[in-house]
Image 1 (cartoon, rainbow, N blue to C red):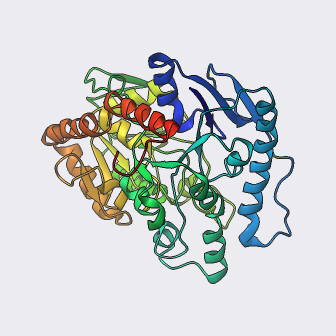
Image 2 (cartoon, rainbow, N blue to C red; image 1 turned 180 degrees about the vertical axis):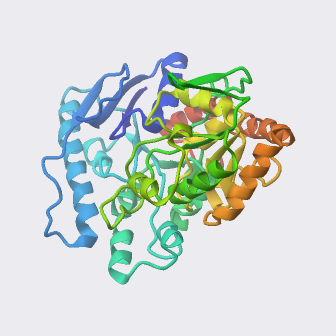
Length: 409
């Protein structure tokens, strides 16, 4: 069977399943991805590049649609060349939302399409209104709704869909939900393991271990959607209370999700200007390899994961697998995995005083939270281990490819 993976920044969500299939099947695999993608992988590839940006005079509600259409056109043209070689795929696994997969059925009408859906947008009662505390104005509601255009195209064209969590699945239009499986791409529980002896060297003056007080924060960017402003306020106050506390932050100084600040500053710049810190105990490490992230989770006294009702980060699951104690926001994506007081702690997203109090308590009595750490790992072992999920993923791919996948599978 020939499998084509389509992802603007492959491997992305397909890293685990692609590696698994390479080791455990005879399927031929290839990749379609952006020409600018610098990720390393050992599969044949076809690249595409949009020929222009969306025009500035396009209606604001249609800019995302135009951008997606241009992306889809670029992918269409690149894959048409692949088709001429006679190497048409039997099934395409495509990451939906950016437009690259919009015209796949036009290029390969006989290929099955298994689309991966992360998020469906709503202009009311959703992530954006959660952050701002008010509904978007009518123009923004139109713009947000129209961001679903490439997603709807994929929902209409797909043979089957996949969504990583039940919460994210619940946001899809109900008419499509029965044809989308809830299947996470899994956590490598043999790599992300607890280790009480782990150490992490931050710089020439600082090496930390599980015996130290270490609060951690990990996200792609530093933004409101992942509670970065609240976290930095919490850190400022905790440092004053606890002279031994170190805080380690992984992520880029950018906004990956949500809106930029209106004053042009990054949220990191704003936080450093707004709050007081002991910078010798506040460590920004940028993006790091998985090995560094793993050791950080192994030594973490408490891992703070705050998120709006939005896409759940892989990092939270991997942290749980490594035995980290999650102090997470009491929002739907987190509550799908964390039961308060059993396998982690839930705190109000905006209530910095309660977050400070909870972290202070954890740092005062770390021995009282060992069972929670164990339960966190057990949760991942029981529900999210690649050992169990990747065989199911392979079966889903094969079922879709041979036309036997249905809501009863």
